[in-house]
Structure formats: C-alpha cells, structure tokens
Image (tube, rainbow, N blue to C red):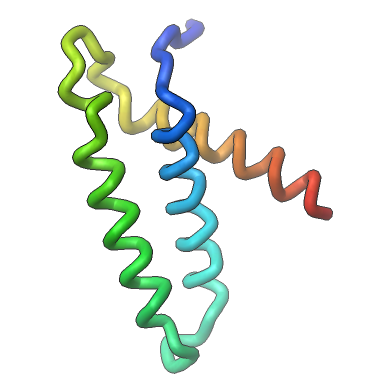
Length: 83
C-alpha cells in the first residue's frame, strides 16, 4: 500500500538531521564529549514536535513513522553521495 502523506521539506530535513546527530552520538564513547550532540538531539526533537505540520487537520495517524522512513531514505541518499 502506497502512503500519500506529504511532509514539508523542512520537516523531513529536521528528522534527517536528527538521524545524523543520533548516528554520530551512537558512534562516540560516553566520555567523548557527547553533551553538545545530546543537546542538539533535544533541540531537534522539540523542533519536530512543534512543527506546524502536526496541527494541520487531516494528517495521517501514522505520520511520525512515515516521517522517519522518508528521513532515513533522504539520509541514505546523502550518505551515498558523500561516499
């Protein structure tokens, strides 16, 4: 089944940034200066959760899951281009 949910590019970008930040944080040891990355994750989480898209009527119930899928696809494309 094809999902027809459309997300604004900035919202997908925020989620992709969240995924990149999380990936960077996961690769560092706990003592490796992770405070800034943890703060960035919190800020990105807040920006995603208060984005105007979520207050729009008629949005899909599975929106957060689909948003993560699309952000992962964008991040994968970006990582492939960088390689």
